Image (cartoon, rainbow, N blue to C red):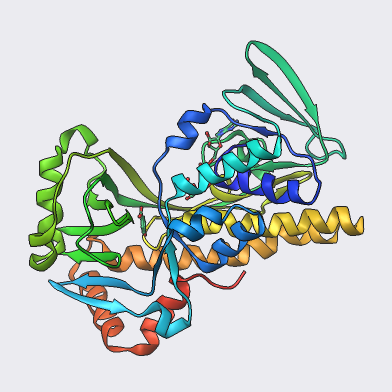
Amino acid sequence: MGAGPAGLLLGQLLHKEGVDTLILERRSAQYVAGRVRAGVLEPGTVGVLERAGVAGRLRAEGLTHDGVEIGFRGRRHRIALKALTGKSVTVYGQTEVTRDLMEARAAAGAPSFYEVEDVQLHEITGARPRVTYRHAGSTHEVDCDFIAGCDGFHGVSRRSIPAAALSICERVYPFGWLGVLADVPPPWEELIYANSERGFALASLRSPTRVRCYLQCSLEDRVEQWSDGQFWDEFRLRMGEEIGARVQTAPSLEKSFAPLRSFVAEPLRYGRLFLAGDAAHIVPPTGAKGLNLAVSDVHYLYEALCGFYGEASERSLAEYSDRALRRIWRAERFSWWMTRQLHRFPGDEFDARLQQTELEYLFESQTAQANLAENYVGLPL
Ligand code: APR
Ligand code: PHB
């Protein structure tokens, strides 16, 4: 279920093992391919994409980053990812990952149906689950061994599990991110996560000629209220003088608002339905874990399914949820921690002083920097 990165990647990995898959997607292929999302890949993610045979363009065009910067009170501090962990991250947009996966699936001749409606899951707890859907005016039915619920936060899969069988943990943050994509060369070499008095801002990039920038803003803010000019003025102020003076601006190619949330539904299995990616969990984007976590779930689910087909045993399927959740909760912790330290929160002076203390400690302690770096480059799969 779903042709986001999770569904497409699982399909590709299974195709290579000779397991047949069918992908059902609610949106059009054009919409899926055009969505702008994050763009930082952990080395473990790159490894899984390699295994799926879709890392050619990523290897050629992805940018290797050996560090990230944290800004606070007008000063910037570098976290030396490579020196601290031996690992780097790769800047390569999720939009590009999706395109590579869609092309690989088309080349493999594996079936995907876009713009499907009224998707329903049946007999999930039996040995032969079924899915019904409407496509191009007619109703279809598929029976299958397993259903992989990769249909995102608003998908049908998680909602098909009885409420009593799921435990939900959630934290909603009192702000969102406004993001802009623009064709200008980035005047920063590495990503800058800035905690400024005016709120958080992130300077990211997609290529040597394209930037992706974000501002913390109020949940009441609407995209239309922010002209490009206002966005760049505020971005300059939050980035501080040195970067601010060097930022070139251009009309936005895309501008969107996203509220921040932490969410985990567990377990990830109900009968023959397995949840993976945003269908099961959401992290706030501070730390860039969303896509990487979807990929690690898929890696575990792929191994579980290979175990089932290879050894004719249910053991690996039974282990999937716990295995994936261990890593999910660690990424939830890290994303919550990054969000907590870098944004302006309503709260009292005690909260503000703790945040300041946490950041000052980070800038002075190699151990604290190693902790951030270890999580940023991604915990082992
Ligand atoms: N039937 C079929 N498809 C559906 C349905 C449905 N009822 N509901 C949703 N979908 C589709 C969505 O249109 C979307 O294309 O499922 C797909 C889910 O994709 P993503 O939301 O990208 O989720 P996932 O593949 O888990 O990728 C996680 O993407 O959302 C970002 O921040 C997230 O980076 C992370 C990554
Ligand atoms: C992005 O480039 O879109 C991006 C990068 C890092 C993040 C979030 C988003 O933490």
